[in-house]
Amino acid sequence: MDTNQAPISILNLSILCGLVVLFSLFAAQLPLFAESHPTDIDVKAIVKRMDELYRSDTSQTNMEMQIVTPHWERTLALEVWTQGMDKTFILINSPKKEKGVATLRIGNEMWNYLPKTNKVMKVPPSMMMGSWMGSDFTNDDLVKESSMLDDYTYERITPADALPDHIYIQLLPKEDSPIVWGKLIVAIRVSDRIPVWQHFYDETGRLTRVMNFKEIKSFDGKTIPSVMEMIPQNKEGHKTVVRFVDAEFDKGIDEKVFTRRNLQKRR
Image (cartoon, rainbow, N blue to C red):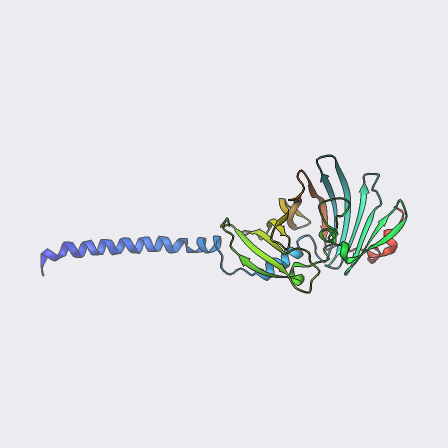
């Protein structure tokens, strides 16, 4: 045996052992990297979850809608009932000036009731993107006639300023859908699939509205952002904040709630 070669062999063995230890440590971290940067994202499931975020088989909620402009501010107290994705009933309980105003949506039809004139007015499709009660939310935002899953194509994207703990999805309206937006981009947390923000772009690619989702809370076993803040990008000093006060899901709701007769009911 050549004793002059022994030190080299021992050195090589030490290096090899060191590499094995380093590889073992790195391999132990692989699940963490995979969890933080998932590649098996089910985009369709996320879009479906967005559609159903504030709905279930049924829901009954109490909300506050704060409308802010540079010249005035007011807060509406709302009670909202929903059934699946097709039925919505909204009733304003305060302030006194708007009390009793109600909105009903069944399928692709929508009506508003104004107690001062005791009239029910049907909202045409062309007005679905119009302002609801002077807020920065549209009729469609409140009653959700359009569906992200059905009316848009969608894909995962990676913006230049993407954060590693967010998933970004771009939605483009289908050619046969009555959508006025050029595209939507939604940011969702990787950890729990809760949305962070949603950006609305017009057909020229200009950002027109930003909706921020805030204050994650659990209501009746369902975890949702309890605050939605809508900020128009072309109206300085304007914003509308919707805040969930309480909510119940999957409880029995009388079918009579979702009727035109209920719109004009004396309360």
